[in-house]
Image (cartoon, rainbow, N blue to C red):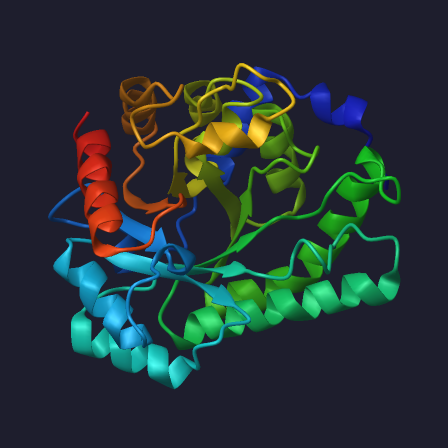
Length: 301
């Protein structure tokens, strides 16, 4: 049955809270609940422009104090190579990013395109399992002329549900990221969407910087609650020129509009522990060293 945007918006705060409790079943492995510290810091592999090999990159990140790195799927790095790097350095791969979800949209009007998107998601789930990760980051769709809001909602949920049995069998979470796709731009709608997927294996990969455009990210956290399984860490500074919204991501961590102490306070209230993955412009040793230090300051706030 088609779920309209209006119906999604009618979800009450009480229902959201109840749903958060219902979806709090934890599919994460032991590494998701660190005993030595509450947060582990990672970066996206695209941030690491240092080194000729994957092992070079892993060694640098380990040296700089990072706990992990997120890879893409499909990946240029075979599972065997990745596992060797993990074994040699001790650096973890907590999850992977579905790298085709923008082009092979689960919300596309073409059944063939949606099928390719679903197959890519299935492949990402398997790759993640093979390398010892616990989640696949997914952008579920995009509102465009060929997919209005309701169509995006209906089509993407239908495809995600097809992948849920595999995700449950593999014990790999499907985590929905909030992005600038004109879809799920409100925390209540995001929570409603996740719950409509019908399994606690589906959760949120909450991108703190992406939320700033729509509303303060610390307001998202109590609404999404236990649905939040991983975090993307970046800042955002609202530009003076509204036609250049993308410029806001140039802000370094702690120099944008994110109220990091309030975000951390809200995360503590919901009992979040686990991974925070930086997704910002970087590259060499100096830049990554600075990112690591700023992430430490955020997590300590």
